[in-house]
Length: 340
Ligand SMILES: *Cc1c(COP(=O)(O)O)cnc(C)c1O
Image (tube, rainbow, N blue to C red; front, side):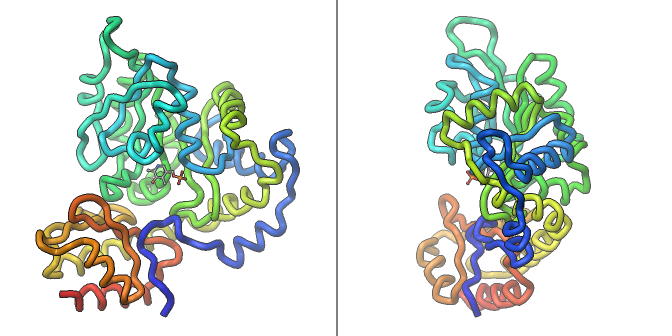
């Protein structure tokens, strides 16, 4: 059997049908705004979430960083969870790109609430940075795929509106959240000023993220994308993969969630386990018993052609995805049960 790669949902390869859609794409120079397929992707993604406009970018890091740049200025501050991707996994980009400060909240499995945010908002005093932006992550990666429902986002959006703060969504896995919550993109979209959606995670496209927002914000975002070197030319070949993914790979995310749940159930019965975080979507994070070395554990899995990621002290992460099949699930469970 081929390698079973549970390191991330970014490891998927484009399917034959997706490649076919890419080959057939109509393209043009997107820096001139002339790529019809990019324009179609941006428009349809925006419409999905009830936003005015979209901007296709090479990565979710770029869409997040552009959004932060849009909403902040030097001397101002971003509020987010302590484990947020924008703070931990974007290379310190908030400081580098936006010269902004960060107020981190120790949330619950990556999720923060309106009361916690309210306590972070700075009074108008020259000693403090100026609170400008709140950023939520849905689903939360470090939180083990936990998700916000629309009802949880609503009071946060209300607070942001009343305090004149912008609200951004790092929606790298927002479709996992929507499928799990059985809610629509527009239900969540209404609450955010900007939204970053990744096409290269659970949706199975090879490249790309889309930033959504108002016409005015996206016009400015296009300028920032250019200065970051993210203006692409015949990007329609890549955008076609994104369109294909949005049309074909959304509903099937429930399969990833079911398989993650099955991994959780069998992990719970394994002797090497100290704790499995409750599985809500496609991420499974578990803690090994003290005395079991994570690197040795990962090496044992790798010997059986199963790849996983170390994810903090004694922690391992599995992520299920489009290329992780029921056969692979069965084999993974067998291997896990056999590891002593
Ligand atoms: C993957 C991811 C991103 C974006 O990552 P890129 O690799 O730059 O596309 C942003 N936020 C979260 C939560 C992610 O998991």
